[in-house]
Length: 244
Image (cartoon, rainbow, N blue to C red; front, side):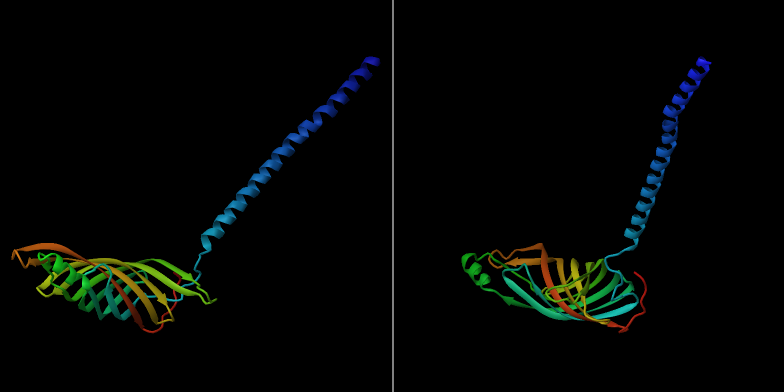
């Protein structure tokens, strides 16, 4: 009888010791699995939200299927001897909001600086320069950046930045020259049809120079960095909004 009671007591104690571990094991595993599932679902939700939230929720200006007319003024930035200033206009069409095809014609006048007289006195072998008269350029414009900014006031101004590249003709005092150009630009959208923009173009072409003393000629690549400012008018004056 004692042995039976003893064996029953051992079985009862053994069940008390083992049963919590057995029960705790599945409970801990289920809790860990549940936490992992919650963590994964929360990550998925965050990823979806980040993918859908954009810094610019809605563009205030679309260029797609519109024409741009842009009267402009320009001046040179990298010539210490001859300051070039002029004016003209550009015409562009945008088959897509980020892509434009343009044509620019610009007349340029040249003002001789004091540096020319100084070097002519110091060096009689200074070459005679053939200055630019006007140019006609065809360009492609690509706008990879669209954004908005606020400066001093609370009003927000939308803008885009774009790259320029193309070919054309430059007319100098010695005749027509094949030219290429590339640069960058920045547009500020004032309303649905009016834009202010700034451009910096690097104009490249080959020119022939003549030395007054030796009476010899040589060719050299001319590099003119031009800054332009323009006010653009877009037609039609309004547009149907499409999500961009």
